[in-house]
Length: 286
Ligand SMILES: NC(=O)c1ccc[n+]([C@@H]2O[C@H](COP(=O)([O-])OP(=O)(O)OC[C@H]3O[C@@H](n4cnc5c(N)ncnc54)[C@H](OP(=O)(O)O)[C@@H]3O)[C@@H](O)[C@H]2O)c1
Image (cartoon, rainbow, N blue to C red):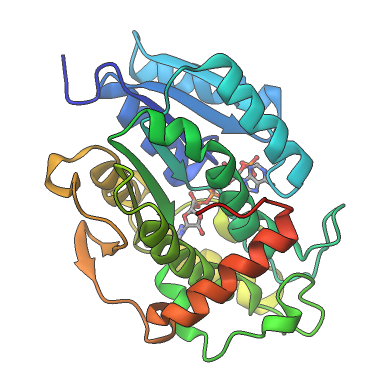
């Protein structure tokens, strides 16, 4: 028996880097783990890797391209059909790209994958989380959010006017605003919501960053610690009794830390919630 026995955790982006390490560590703590993968082959490989590390792991893969909202909806339906409880939702999947790309829904890909997808998935699974209370939502943000000086509200969904390299820090700022507003809305429901910066970690994250910036990112990442270090704060927020009652926080190295002034703007958080509901087609909830 460990502190995660009997608990079910879902980790998005669990096929690589920090997410894969997080999923393996939670499986090692005896949780049932749902890994979300882009496709079946990557999901099977992730489960095999986790079972190699934790032979008696209870792990299964569900698939979704998280940049596509219909697939996020199908994923949420599948989770609810297959599982009676969800104790921890780790919104970890993320992309960074210097090329402007648009999803089938017409959203800028980084906005859709890094922000709208966790917003919608959390909203759709909220009832299951509340029925499993005490439960936790953990969202992987980044210290990169600090470089954002203003939120281009009208441009957010399509990123049409965004400069190359701007969409990623912006999406990570949105992760923090989403978390604070979610925590406020979940008050009294027995579900906490926290977010984190995992550190600068050697993963595949920079693979879609092109040109000189891409080369610099890849060289810099080579000298950074690996996913074992990057997963520390996610696993802490998902499992530690120390933070059972803590909500609405931004954590770095397992410590509550103050994010940028913009990330603490409650009006911006409320405005983002309304915009995200409209974009995701999610019915208003309390
Ligand atoms: N590494 C760092 O230094 C660092 C710093 C700050 C924050 N972060 C954050 O940490 C989180 C994890 O990143 P990482 O560094 O571990 O990078 P990574 O190794 O590239 O992992 C990203 C994961 O997200 C998945 N993913 C991306 N787009 C997806 C989509 N459309 N549908 C389904 N899955 C998708 C990837 O799946 P595929 O493998 O199939 O692409 C992969 O499993 C991200 O949110 C990132 O912003 C990382």
